Image 1 (cartoon, rainbow, N blue to C red):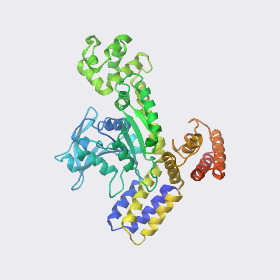
Image 2 (cartoon, rainbow, N blue to C red):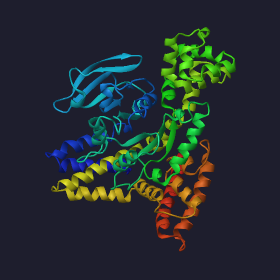
Image 3 (cartoon, one colour):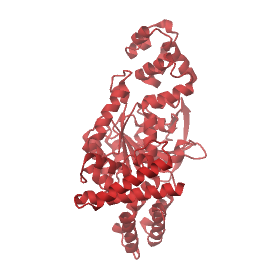
Length: 489
């Protein structure tokens, strides 16, 4: 029986035990949550670019990116058959709200409600990306409005109940003390102390790191790599990915009109184009012969940023991409959006059942501690058994120990251990560090060789105790890989 099936079974048992108590309804909701899309929160400090990145992930400009009222409210974006917006007030039942859509962005009429009186907004929108995961946009940590920032803490790090998010994408410009405090609080201690398995870091607005130069993203990748390799960061997030959020959002919403306007810049001699793009002010106010009005130029800057205008015009000049579709794909790649989507897929979506089971088991453990009922001891024992015996949770514990520095050894052995237990992704080729197109025979041979290596390491009397325990988990991971490859054949 899979982990999620075992979790589902113990939840049904617990629902019976706690029926008629305050926990009864909560456990029923958690049981339904197991079959729902993964819940991923987008968090970070104020002005980090959370809403812009969320729009890029959805593939539509839905979330407002200005400093309006709705940016101070926790807002859920989920897939559904119709277009609607609902508000959940702190007092009273949910109610539908009227909304309009201008330039793609949803403008929500709160209908007389004050932002501070709304617990959350739920935007239901038919979108392919939202079928796999529900995204939660949160107010900025460190906001000048303490009340707005507190909503993010209350939602993701509640004092008296489980967090509604299964995972978090955390945007940062550099590692601020407030970032560390929040990410440490978001992690639990029951399953994965202090595992970063449910968090990805995004080095946001990455194009600004290189002052908008064409090589800005290369500089950002080097910084993100150094940041992600630091021991302090590795304990908080699985990976740090640089993303130029504005360019990523524009990449997935690009229009042929915008491409046509940028062709005018691309048609200029290189020297003239460079002079025009020395600054935003020069781009807007000089060279009237370009044939673009000030309003059109300002709109291009708002959509692309100076870095995006430079990059896009260069790609068009060099004929790297010709149509809006080709250019969209190229900009998504160069903005870091493609890399982020791949990491979300390998570290979150491929592990969706484990992450959702983890959230449910934490809620169950809390219920059995807070309220003892006839039968609750049996529920607590089942929860403990799943946490202790399910191999995916053992992998999470070892991953946590490796990244916290508790498991030590030769650097190459520790790096291989981290990969084998899913630290870089849960697919066979990611665990075995092989190309994505590696065939079954190559994967089987690599898994067999890894199995022998880690069996020897687990059984060697010279292996330190912590590494020996971790090696047994790696052996089980190799056996699981071989069994999966055999089934696929």
